Image 1: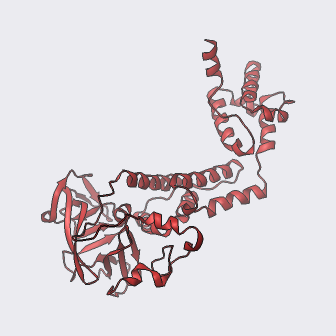
Image 2 (image 1 turned 45 degrees about the horizontal axis):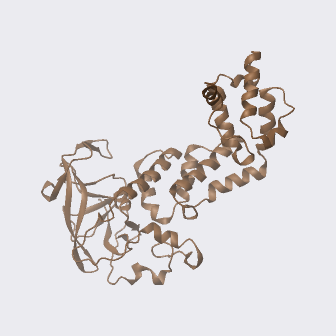
Length: 378
């Protein structure tokens, strides 16, 4: 019984060791004292002598013995709290500049993984808030996007066009979900399946970016804007007979994957769409359970989703016709056109590069698989 009582008396909070863990210790201990109805003892609003003694004892037990020197002359919980704050809460200019620099200069390529990247930015923001330097959720989310490599650009475009409010939680959830989705997906389930395409070693876009973050590979190509090579060595430059039709931009424009003369068989790249969609039921094969019941268009109209499946599409790339399989396409009978989701392409390891003249879609090996031209909806 004594061991059980002691376990209940001392919470599972790391003891305060110094400046390194002060912010997290302060947050956890405040929550604990509030739970124990002792926080008023720390703020000086409590007059109950029994609670005052109890609060002082609990704080002392949550401090590492090496730091007793800072509190051994304190007589109340409030004095202990203030003494520790004065000793370890650095709110000076140098501290603020350092945290802001961490927040603004942290890059995904400099971190071991996405989880570490998110944690570094969130920790810096939390520490700034604890020294009364508030950073809004929108700015934290923006800083997370700013530190991403170039191949995340389609995702950023999709977020911008979706109208979703940018917050720290929104971006954090999106990044972690994308990683989880990538880990759970079978490597054999490539988004594009080409007939007669030779098999070669897998090498995804992220690994290319990671290799480029050190040594001589830390160079950016001004053709595709990716890292690891210069423009004259760019895979796009080495591809022959790549042609894009130049069409003037308008605010109502969209990108359509090149598949011949413009007709109702065309596929449009949509950065705001969450799914691939088509009104053509006769195209669907290998039907699966539909993931959603309806979609909402830009004018707030609800369109019913009938089913989902695979669509085979013939595209021309470098004067070569290829047949590709587009997986998980929603059948939406009342949809006016066929839409390819940019975010779905990127989640499958593809890269979509937009230029003034059109766009290119590259697979995970950085091979060009389709080109697009700008389409003006007039």
